[in-house]
Length: 163
Image (cartoon, rainbow, N blue to C red):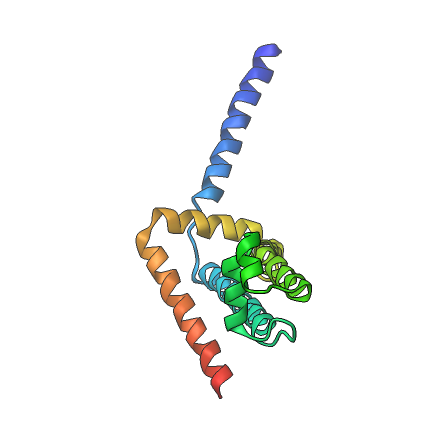
């Protein structure tokens, strides 16, 4: 009886391993690539939007009064002598700190946004993401095809925005 169970476990485990390999080796479809590219474009648009928010925070800040003063504060930041030399006020310090905190949080915000898109099966789904991501690492031609698709999709989006 033990031999029978061992036999079943051994061959049952082998068939599951084979199934897992079949799934992992599953071909990437054009639909998979399109979904993956869509997430890349959506993430790029999100980054562009957040970058514009940051620029707006800098250029239209009532306290800092534009990019030149922002750059002056940035260059002096953390050095008490330099901060004193540019006459950094407490209000400017608070405004710069707010901008810097937003800027420092951008990477985390973008990663969270893209992760949510990947996890959403209606948008992409983790299994498709893993399949395409693995395939583009192994196949330079597929990576090139994806890059071209992303570029085409961005052109369409940029063209729609300009109209």
